[in-house]
Image 1 (cartoon, rainbow, N blue to C red):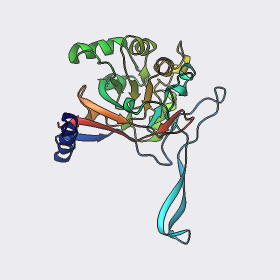
Image 2: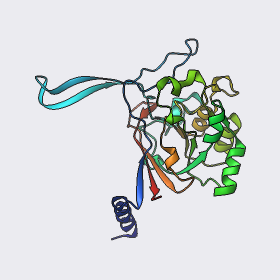
Image 3: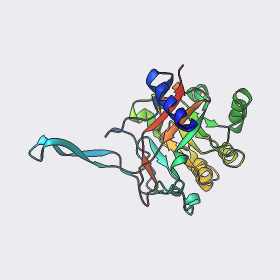
Image 4: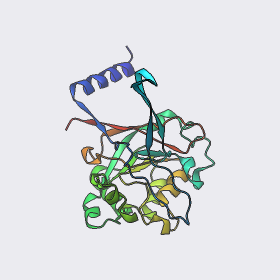
Length: 260
């Protein structure tokens, strides 16, 4: 058996024994799942999640149950591929069906700004937040997925989660820094979208989208359980549906982390 095969076998053993925890970073997807709402003057909104019964052990299918699903690509816990944004639309490997699959697995860097968000719902993560993190935990390694922990996902009421458009996110400066000064794999948040609620008024608008997708990197939104991850040492698996011509996808995000 090769050393790589031995390592994979050891990993499955550690998962089975509890030495490695599997943490679900995904919000439940249901009809009440909140989705981002745009002002009418900005553009058309994406539909939320709905399902209809095709059969349920009845005359339409006596031995099986299944449903038909309807939703937007960017619904619930979801993947923003680079071609989702105008700055990333020309990338040949920028869609959910064209991104190399190894890109969907990345070491996680969890920057905790939850205490600041608790005091200010519109808090913007800064470059100094990143530098303070690196001073304590070391430089963000190449290929890492940066996750902004806000504990926003603890808001289980949809209205409180959307909060009339007042929610935290990254500053313009920190997104430019992460895109240009660090070789990140992508950027993830607990909020409904990767940008702050007020980011439409920034210059450039929606900097997480602008800078990440410009650099052919992806975003993850509506994550949960980031408080269960260490600052470093976890690995995230975030594979979107392989939608040809798509711009993103709902997805199940899992993290592998050392036992506490």
